[in-house]
Length: 462
Ligand code: NAI
Image (cartoon, rainbow, N blue to C red; front, side):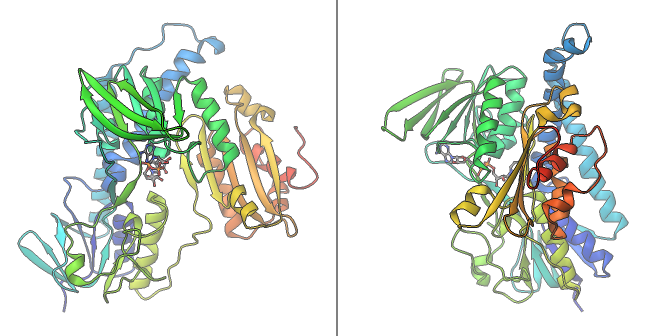
């Protein structure tokens, strides 16, 4: 008999959820993790710490810009970077300890160390080889390197270094106007750094709704962030106390430089599967690098599965979680599945940006007949009371059937609001179903209902 029914490699959101679920379903489970703490990139150097800094810097922004308007008078707080870092570290510790507790509670064995797969059914951790009926690769991703830019995690940093800078820099150049660049760029802008985002494309956040992206850029510019769009970065050189960034404008090839105290490289991530021994095992990779899997997350080698950032699809913690859940059910003999048509995406800036389902651009390109229902937060009383009237909810519905095809929100609490639309889509709802659902007043959620009404006879408050 094998040592375990299942060994999961990696304890990020994909791996730890898979391990816990599999154990709940009666399997004997171990999870291998080489970091000192569980939780992977997300809990240790990603989603969770960045949300702590986003929350703290947003609170500062409120104190500086909105407290006075509400009659809250007094000096705006100063930034004690050491204490802000300690707060962030405490949030990380609470969360990683929480996973350790959940492992104990669910009888998941934590094998500490870095894993390799010497043969199907075997996982080596340090000097020991453990056997298992099934192995799940949940090893996540790492920042993709950029030619001409050498990371030192002090002056030229990835998101990992950017979360733990020694001080708030006077200036920050961000390479890449994607999710990481804008989340962390907006943190440092609010904390007082002069932030410039240099983006290869002519727009921000590729893949997001174009109208949302435009509004997003306008609102971030209003917060003091500068944008250089259509610029390809070719190198970053330490110079004096800072870094000199070289880039070329794509439309005319003009070469330019930008000096900054710190450069953040946020040009994407790549699957992290080095050291597992996949080559020797003959585990097939898909053309873009990640591990190739079938609809049941099975790789080309029997008994070895893969999920999360290590396989195709959006690199999102919750997508990995859902796959972890599903593959645990599949290995336990049940029928797990993930609905890839309803995976929300959220950018945790202020305001937040959230989306689910189809983008208008994709519907247009596919020649689909659709209608758009839009509602501005300016018409929402609750948002206005919070100085959060910027932004809108946009719902896309099938022109004939009224079925909701997608939604895009920029505005207060967008990352929470999106979920009622996800649930509606999961149930195959029409926009009219949302429009006829009673929404509490006064809530920002009413803007969702109004956008649904706008797909039909029209909203009330616009
Ligand atoms: P990204 O793919 O979101 O954005 C990278 C940006 O860099 C793109 O806009 C691209 O055009 C630009 N770029 C690439 N090469 C360039 C060059 N040489 N010069 C200038 N610009 C260049 O990648 P990002 O922000 O690094 O995030 C990595 C992954 O992590 C993404 O898949 C993202 O979804 C995920 N993530 C998700 C979060 C969330 O859901 N809130 C938070 C943080 C990361």
